[in-house]
Image 1 (tube, rainbow, N blue to C red):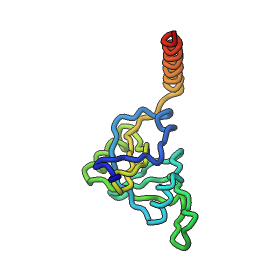
Image 2: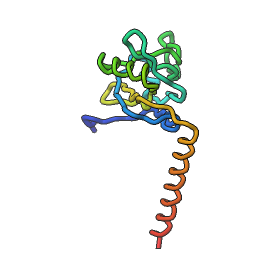
Image 3: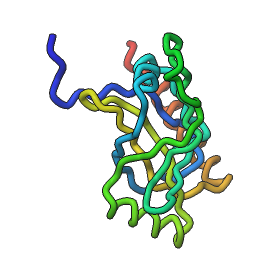
Length: 157
């Protein structure tokens, strides 16, 4: 069966980012990888839990993204926690740089996925949540769960 035109296969998500930050905008970025890293990502061996992005000299890098070494790889395996360059347009990088520098935003990797045959990373322009914001979000989530539970109980009979 042939692959669909715009098929997206998500390999990793950073759920902690949605808990710790308000995501204002998202961008799709390519990522510079080696061959064994792509094979390891395809196997789903990625951890993005404490990752962040840093802008240096007009380039943007993802740090803290752990891609486990490919088990069948040899000398071509690289450091699992190395900085990886993200591929964005120059104007997008400059916009992010301006917002991060002035307004207290940060850039956080949110998802890693395959779009067609390329590995892409969704990054978000985020603002940190305070403790009371986190509690409020948790309370809303719990209330929604309770409502859904009650609704499913009513529909049984």
